Image (cartoon, rainbow, N blue to C red; front, side):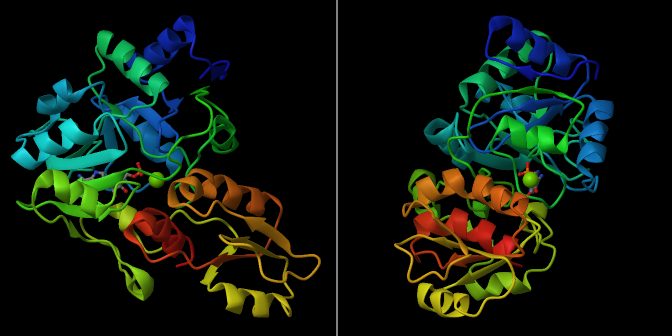
Amino acid sequence: MSNPRFLTGSAADIMAAARTLADGNLLGLPTETVYGLAADALNPRAVAAIFSAKGRPADHPLIIHLASSAQVPLFAAGVPAFATALIKAFWPGPLTLILPRRAGVADAAAGGHATVALRCPSHPLAQQVLQQALALGVQGVAAPSANLFGRVSPTTALHVREAFADLHIMDGGDCDVGIESAIVDLSRGAPVLLRPGMLTAAQLSAVCGSPVQTAYAQGQAAAGVADAPAAPGTLESHYAPRARVRLMNAAAMAAGLQSASLPVAALWLRTPLHVPPGILSLRMPADAAGCAHELFARLRELDTAGVGEIWIETLPADAVWDGVRDRLLRASA
Ligand code: AMP
Ligand code: MG
């Protein structure tokens, strides 16, 4: 890309972003969850460029972002009643639906799987870019998180620039949600939550009218997760900073810090217990939404500061924390 730059929300820059996609190039795109590395989902060459830029294996499917639910039938072979209800309740928003894929459509973006992952993001700039791109003939935009494979997802335009020197990046500010979308698989008959986000299984179940099963590892079990067949996002080690992440309760953390020798950082949800001098100690918001919003940026800052280990206070057990817990379990795997 010649003259890679940051794009604003001006009409001219929205058009420049849409043209970038229509021309088959990559774009850093803000969404309410995290920043995406975006390209025309129906252009196999553009999709291949996403995989190679990220270093992502080509069989790990990408989420396709849509301007509205009107584009769903272009990609999905069938739309079960569950899907219609979830779309009505949560789109545009941080929910990805896995649906049976229309044969021959978006093969590369779907990594050859028989299903396709679809989402309609609510970020106002993402909405405008998707609509303008649609007007230029781009019917869906494949966009995995704009980070190198396995690393922490970006939540600011600068995070994207750190990994990708050579693309236009639209600056949409800090991502509101801050962790990736919840992914619900609707291709198996009954809905299954593959990746928790900020929407809880209970909220999704209420809309589906039947319990949404969960297929992600929780608690201790997460340490033993192998490559999950349906969702590469459930790889054991993912979303990982360079520093080693350890989860422990506040008392164990305070006790361990007394004799910690490495450059260690401590993240607390409550008022920190006694912290020895020299330990980098940060207080995170004590509510799940606030914590999700800040988490990835803090992990990146601590990596930049060169800490060897990040000790994080164990999260509260309630389901509203499932999305944050999932990311931390993977970061610590
Ligand atoms: P990312 O955009 O980096 O958050 O990663 C997208 C994630 O979406 C993948 O890691 C998968 O977990 C999930 N995904 C995308 N397409 C499918 C699919 N067809 N079936 C199951 N999971 C999918
Ligand atoms: Mg990702």
